[in-house]
Image (cartoon, rainbow, N blue to C red; front, side, top):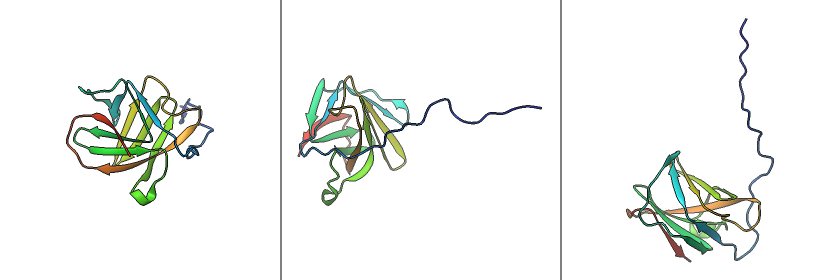
Amino acid sequence: MDYIRAGTLLKPRQAVARDVYAENAELTITDPRLRINGAEQTADDRPAMVSAPLLSVDIPWQGRFTLSFKPRAEEGFERAGEVAGNSLVFAHSGNIFRIDCGDRIAVGSGIYNIYARKEPVEDPMRFRIGR
């Protein structure tokens, strides 16, 4: 007789992602590294640090995504992922984008929803501040 155990050794996360309540909450990106569907991407133009309420990132062959902690539904933003610690993960069109940073992306230790709006562009990965 064989015994097969299915499952995971990882404990499920107890905290649930929530919206940021501060009106002026900013995303802070420090020494970013991008992964698309788990594969690390190289970038020639990476900032040391960027901090803004709206942040645009150009992803090669994917387009430009503007990211926000606030829902901004009237501006075309949709809930796309979450920020936890120094990682930001969001999904679009079946792809999972993960940006790992050298420091915390949000103030505090919570897990926060991230909202995204896609805007086409074909530049290499680059971060920009926007309003």
